[in-house]
Image 1: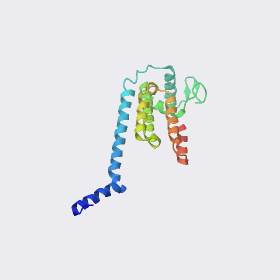
Image 2: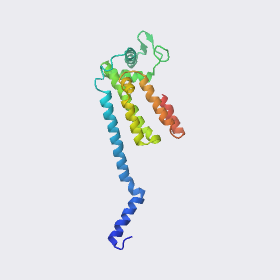
Image 3: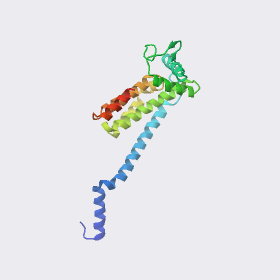
Image 4: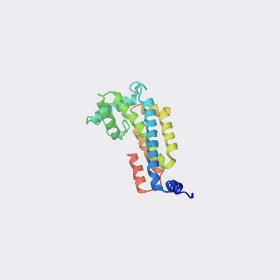
Length: 200
Protein backbone atom coordinates (compact mmCIF):
# COMPACT_ATOMS: atom_id res chain seq x y z
CA UNK A 1 0.00 0.00 0.00
CA UNK A 2 1.14 3.54 -0.72
CA UNK A 3 2.28 5.95 2.00
CA UNK A 4 0.30 8.87 0.53
CA UNK A 5 -3.33 9.23 1.74
CA UNK A 6 -4.73 10.03 -1.69
CA UNK A 7 -3.12 6.97 -3.26
CA UNK A 8 -4.22 4.77 -0.35
CA UNK A 9 -7.79 5.98 -0.80
CA UNK A 10 -7.65 5.28 -4.54
CA UNK A 11 -6.17 1.80 -4.01
CA UNK A 12 -8.75 1.00 -1.33
CA UNK A 13 -11.61 2.02 -3.61
CA UNK A 14 -10.10 0.06 -6.50
CA UNK A 15 -9.78 -3.16 -4.50
CA UNK A 16 -13.24 -2.71 -2.97
CA UNK A 17 -14.74 -2.54 -6.45
CA UNK A 18 -12.88 -5.66 -7.46
CA UNK A 19 -13.82 -7.71 -4.42
CA UNK A 20 -17.21 -6.37 -3.36
CA UNK A 21 -19.86 -8.16 -5.43
CA UNK A 22 -22.63 -5.87 -4.27
CA UNK A 23 -20.92 -2.86 -5.83
CA UNK A 24 -20.32 -4.68 -9.08
CA UNK A 25 -23.93 -5.75 -9.61
CA UNK A 26 -25.02 -2.53 -11.29
CA UNK A 27 -22.44 -2.42 -14.11
CA UNK A 28 -22.50 -6.18 -14.65
CA UNK A 29 -26.30 -6.20 -14.68
CA UNK A 30 -26.38 -3.33 -17.13
CA UNK A 31 -23.88 -5.08 -19.40
CA UNK A 32 -25.90 -8.29 -19.23
CA UNK A 33 -29.09 -6.46 -20.13
CA UNK A 34 -27.38 -4.81 -23.09
CA UNK A 35 -26.12 -8.19 -24.28
CA UNK A 36 -29.60 -9.68 -24.03
CA UNK A 37 -31.20 -6.75 -25.86
CA UNK A 38 -28.52 -6.94 -28.56
CA UNK A 39 -28.98 -10.69 -28.96
CA UNK A 40 -32.77 -10.44 -29.15
CA UNK A 41 -32.43 -7.63 -31.68
CA UNK A 42 -30.22 -9.82 -33.89
CA UNK A 43 -32.73 -12.67 -33.68
CA UNK A 44 -35.68 -10.45 -34.56
CA UNK A 45 -33.77 -8.89 -37.47
CA UNK A 46 -32.77 -12.28 -38.90
CA UNK A 47 -36.32 -13.57 -38.42
CA UNK A 48 -37.83 -10.56 -40.19
CA UNK A 49 -35.43 -10.85 -43.14
CA UNK A 50 -35.92 -14.59 -43.61
CA UNK A 51 -39.56 -15.20 -42.69
CA UNK A 52 -41.58 -12.14 -43.68
CA UNK A 53 -40.74 -11.09 -47.27
CA UNK A 54 -43.24 -12.32 -49.91
CA UNK A 55 -44.90 -14.42 -47.22
CA UNK A 56 -48.28 -14.69 -48.96
CA UNK A 57 -46.92 -16.21 -52.16
CA UNK A 58 -43.69 -17.96 -51.14
CA UNK A 59 -43.73 -20.89 -50.74
CA UNK A 60 -46.63 -21.76 -53.04
CA UNK A 61 -49.93 -22.84 -51.57
CA UNK A 62 -49.85 -26.46 -50.43
CA UNK A 63 -52.87 -28.78 -50.26
CA UNK A 64 -52.60 -29.63 -46.56
CA UNK A 65 -52.06 -25.98 -45.74
CA UNK A 66 -55.28 -24.88 -47.40
CA UNK A 67 -57.21 -27.69 -45.69
CA UNK A 68 -55.78 -26.59 -42.32
CA UNK A 69 -56.68 -22.99 -43.14
CA UNK A 70 -60.28 -23.89 -43.94
CA UNK A 71 -60.76 -26.00 -40.80
CA UNK A 72 -59.10 -23.29 -38.68
CA UNK A 73 -61.32 -20.54 -40.06
CA UNK A 74 -64.44 -22.64 -39.42
CA UNK A 75 -63.36 -23.40 -35.85
CA UNK A 76 -62.72 -19.71 -35.18
CA UNK A 77 -66.35 -19.12 -36.23
CA UNK A 78 -67.55 -21.81 -33.81
CA UNK A 79 -67.95 -24.57 -36.41
CA UNK A 80 -65.68 -27.57 -35.63
CA UNK A 81 -65.85 -29.09 -39.09
CA UNK A 82 -63.59 -30.22 -41.88
CA UNK A 83 -65.68 -29.42 -44.92
CA UNK A 84 -68.64 -31.88 -44.67
CA UNK A 85 -67.08 -33.90 -41.80
CA UNK A 86 -67.55 -33.14 -38.11
CA UNK A 87 -64.12 -32.42 -36.64
CA UNK A 88 -63.12 -34.43 -33.54
CA UNK A 89 -59.38 -33.50 -33.80
CA UNK A 90 -58.27 -37.09 -33.17
CA UNK A 91 -59.72 -38.71 -36.29
CA UNK A 92 -57.07 -39.39 -39.00
CA UNK A 93 -58.68 -36.93 -41.42
CA UNK A 94 -57.69 -33.99 -39.16
CA UNK A 95 -55.57 -35.08 -36.16
CA UNK A 96 -54.35 -31.59 -35.30
CA UNK A 97 -54.38 -29.55 -32.11
CA UNK A 98 -57.62 -27.61 -31.60
CA UNK A 99 -55.75 -24.81 -29.81
CA UNK A 100 -53.52 -24.26 -32.80
CA UNK A 101 -56.47 -24.41 -35.20
CA UNK A 102 -58.39 -21.85 -33.18
CA UNK A 103 -55.55 -19.30 -33.05
CA UNK A 104 -54.63 -19.97 -36.67
CA UNK A 105 -58.23 -19.38 -37.71
CA UNK A 106 -58.46 -16.16 -35.70
CA UNK A 107 -55.27 -14.90 -37.36
CA UNK A 108 -56.61 -15.76 -40.80
CA UNK A 109 -59.97 -14.14 -40.10
CA UNK A 110 -58.25 -10.97 -38.89
CA UNK A 111 -56.67 -10.81 -42.35
CA UNK A 112 -60.08 -11.15 -43.99
CA UNK A 113 -59.75 -14.90 -44.42
CA UNK A 114 -56.52 -14.52 -46.36
CA UNK A 115 -53.78 -17.09 -46.03
CA UNK A 116 -51.38 -14.28 -45.10
CA UNK A 117 -52.87 -14.06 -41.60
CA UNK A 118 -52.26 -17.75 -41.03
CA UNK A 119 -48.73 -17.54 -42.35
CA UNK A 120 -47.87 -14.54 -40.18
CA UNK A 121 -49.01 -16.49 -37.12
CA UNK A 122 -46.86 -19.48 -38.10
CA UNK A 123 -43.88 -17.25 -38.81
CA UNK A 124 -44.30 -15.84 -35.30
CA UNK A 125 -44.04 -19.40 -33.98
CA UNK A 126 -40.57 -19.55 -35.54
CA UNK A 127 -39.59 -16.39 -33.66
CA UNK A 128 -40.98 -17.89 -30.45
CA UNK A 129 -38.89 -21.03 -31.05
CA UNK A 130 -35.73 -18.98 -31.57
CA UNK A 131 -36.38 -16.94 -28.43
CA UNK A 132 -37.06 -20.15 -26.48
CA UNK A 133 -33.74 -21.59 -27.63
CA UNK A 134 -31.95 -18.42 -26.57
CA UNK A 135 -33.61 -17.73 -23.22
CA UNK A 136 -34.24 -21.29 -22.01
CA UNK A 137 -31.05 -22.70 -23.50
CA UNK A 138 -28.83 -20.21 -21.65
CA UNK A 139 -29.29 -22.16 -18.42
CA UNK A 140 -27.87 -25.32 -19.96
CA UNK A 141 -25.48 -24.12 -22.65
CA UNK A 142 -24.62 -20.49 -21.90
CA UNK A 143 -25.54 -17.30 -23.75
CA UNK A 144 -23.18 -17.57 -26.72
CA UNK A 145 -24.03 -21.16 -27.54
CA UNK A 146 -27.76 -20.48 -27.18
CA UNK A 147 -27.59 -17.43 -29.44
CA UNK A 148 -25.68 -19.45 -32.04
CA UNK A 149 -28.22 -22.28 -31.82
CA UNK A 150 -31.13 -19.85 -32.21
CA UNK A 151 -29.51 -18.30 -35.28
CA UNK A 152 -28.85 -21.75 -36.72
CA UNK A 153 -32.51 -22.62 -36.24
CA UNK A 154 -33.70 -19.44 -37.96
CA UNK A 155 -31.30 -19.89 -40.89
CA UNK A 156 -32.01 -23.60 -41.39
CA UNK A 157 -33.70 -24.06 -44.77
CA UNK A 158 -36.36 -26.49 -43.56
CA UNK A 159 -37.30 -24.14 -40.72
CA UNK A 160 -37.76 -21.28 -43.17
CA UNK A 161 -39.91 -23.33 -45.53
CA UNK A 162 -42.16 -24.94 -42.91
CA UNK A 163 -42.64 -21.95 -40.62
CA UNK A 164 -43.63 -19.82 -43.59
CA UNK A 165 -46.59 -22.18 -44.10
CA UNK A 166 -49.71 -22.72 -42.01
CA UNK A 167 -49.31 -26.21 -40.60
CA UNK A 168 -49.97 -27.44 -37.08
CA UNK A 169 -46.66 -29.25 -36.75
CA UNK A 170 -45.09 -25.81 -36.28
CA UNK A 171 -46.87 -25.48 -32.94
CA UNK A 172 -46.07 -29.11 -32.06
CA UNK A 173 -42.40 -28.47 -32.79
CA UNK A 174 -42.38 -25.40 -30.56
CA UNK A 175 -43.98 -27.37 -27.73
CA UNK A 176 -41.51 -30.23 -28.04
CA UNK A 177 -38.64 -27.77 -28.10
CA UNK A 178 -39.81 -26.13 -24.87
CA UNK A 179 -40.28 -29.56 -23.28
CA UNK A 180 -36.76 -30.64 -24.24
CA UNK A 181 -35.13 -27.44 -22.98
CA UNK A 182 -36.77 -27.84 -19.57
CA UNK A 183 -35.91 -31.55 -19.40
CA UNK A 184 -32.25 -30.62 -19.91
CA UNK A 185 -32.36 -28.70 -16.62
CA UNK A 186 -31.96 -30.19 -13.18
CA UNK A 187 -34.89 -32.41 -12.28
CA UNK A 188 -37.44 -30.76 -10.03
CA UNK A 189 -41.19 -30.13 -9.77
CA UNK A 190 -41.10 -26.74 -11.49
CA UNK A 191 -38.99 -27.87 -14.43
CA UNK A 192 -41.02 -31.06 -14.77
CA UNK A 193 -44.28 -29.11 -14.83
CA UNK A 194 -42.91 -26.63 -17.37
CA UNK A 195 -41.73 -29.50 -19.56
CA UNK A 196 -45.21 -31.02 -19.35
CA UNK A 197 -46.79 -27.72 -20.34
CA UNK A 198 -44.68 -27.80 -23.49
CA UNK A 199 -46.64 -30.86 -24.58
CA UNK A 200 -49.89 -28.95 -24.33
